[in-house]
Image (cartoon, rainbow, N blue to C red; front, side):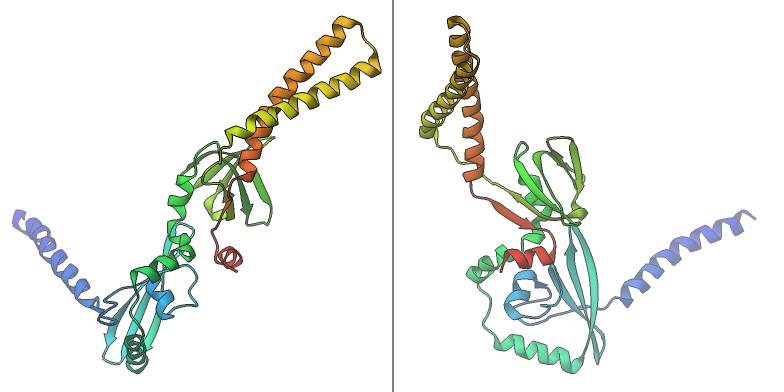
Length: 265
């Protein structure tokens, strides 16, 4: 009885590897598309050679020979930060025609690849969002069409957290269509004196207007003037920081094909 109970266990260890080899044997070899492209068509090559232009957020494609007269393209594309797979069938004739057309076209160069990078930001969505420094003022377009504006608190587990004037908002990456932010805040220290001075004069002017309306005694009158100047200087600091943010170059990043098309028009 011990031998009988032992045999199925041993048999299992023999069957599993054979079954695995059988499954692997069913997977077709990747076909070489052309000599200069190789086995994988990447995103830059897809734009240059105009192959799968109808696939939004294309990442890469490989061709497999299913039988002598049938080929299959397995196309990966990006949806937010997830990679998904689509399949497309080719006959031997259509695949050969594609190879012939690609061989007649000029080979892609490093310079051409670089020029396509601006249209392939969707391949770096997560990296771009993680690179935005916290404390940055950002604007997020929600898929419902509304804009959410606030200070970036964090980006973790594909969720963006913004501090708005009234509450902390959490926006999942799958609910975002576009995000506007500034990669670098400009600095103009030579402007500080002018901005602070103007703000202080405005604060003083407001309190002087108050003094004329209320006609206080000499002591309170100068107290009001002093407080107006101080509040003006504090406001000047905020005005300077806000001005530097608003005058800094804005970066707009689309997360959906529709938004990317709008930005590249």
